[in-house]
Image (cartoon, rainbow, N blue to C red):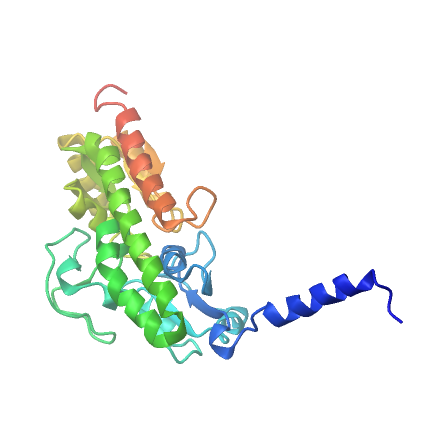
Length: 315
């Protein structure tokens, strides 16, 4: 005969087993992989509570020059989908990846929000789609859309719809997360307007055209770039022209990127007598892990560098 003391305990376990929900096939956690950190950070905002999101490139890796290793291919083989930027960023090597479903996040950006890139400077938004295998003679769609939170907000409905097509059972979560993320993006936009306000009228010389969307959204002044494409070294003549421009336009600082070689920027800055600061468009390190954290870091870095940089002729 069982002890009376054990009866309440046995009854508890019976009730517990009968009331705990059993996960169905539709509740199986999903797994998505993104090429670079900012795309993974955006995906995490939408898939929170429904899917695991990882990134392929490590912090400091450049999507322009990345070549996947066999160990990288193993990591994405089990993912439900692979999300990447698009032509001009990571389009070429992505086509070699052994995963059926590849989603270009650039293609989810509404046409009216896209910028064209031809010479490293921003251009007004244009209609039209950038084909994966062809680029317009005038240039191609700038793939660095994530540097503008309102462009990301405009993309959210298309991203939510794409995830719902991949995982219909997760639709309530994706939709709810998307609405919450859009509200946070509005708040982020307001914060960036305050942070970037001191930059009004200040010419910004960047190393690589990674921030055109940010410049365009917040009416900042672009003074050009040092390197239009990774691996394309600027000529001595071009660097001398930049030195002249720096002095004529009273440019206060030059910004490099941690994913790219710094030597050309250092040579230019030394010749022009201006300081060099690092501006990270990708993040994925402490302080730049969430999407809002990355954008706020970019805004604060830009503003602090310009405010603290010495005036031309006072060095």
